[in-house]
Length: 335
Image (cartoon, one colour):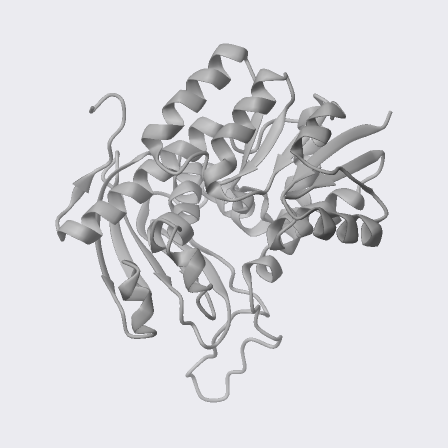
């Protein structure tokens, strides 16, 4: 049986999702964008259909909807799909702020709607293996956790102006994956940041490098680092050091670094340059998981509630960065 998936927003990530959906069996894809010409051009290249606009796309009554538009349009698109009874995949975040996301979560719960949010690291084989290793007891209890998201170069300033800050744009993925792997909520964040690259990044209220010390509910500590200027390449890694063993995610032939030890050559491959490159397999699996969710043959990799909780941690990190003090993560039980 053919499953019809609508996709709105064919920018860089939307075009990638469209290509991945087009490669799946028994999927009919309809795409739309505010720039109808761009949508038609992409549709021609992929051999799929293009709707004139969002109205026409919703009128086609797709079985599922992928939302890849700007953050400001996430809430109206999610709510419209929920109201129409259409399962929806949306890129993170659910809303520009966690306060704005509350009404969305209430609408999802009231409708019993199916909403998947794009935290693709949950589909990455390395992170999945790390979760299995920890949950099985192989690592013992964790004494040291280090998470890193390092872009090779910064995004355009127009993006940074509305991104919400380095922690909300980049490190939110680390906060999500840490809670997903450990099963423990992060309850406190202490963050610091710096600007040593383009001064314009500071002018728009952001930092180009930052680190956060996070505390989990069970007392475990972790460091979460991020930067826009990792010249060696795009580097996303996670280290879990336990009382019985250690495991690292992202330490492969494309690791963006080199060993300082004499006579030791590592890594052997070319480094990744973008997050699309680093997580290409995870993004493919993410769209496959959504189609399975629409067909009711698979589980939801990341619910809206889980995504909003990671955003709460990211917002706490941004507040800590501004105030220079530790900040408790605001959840309903503490509000």
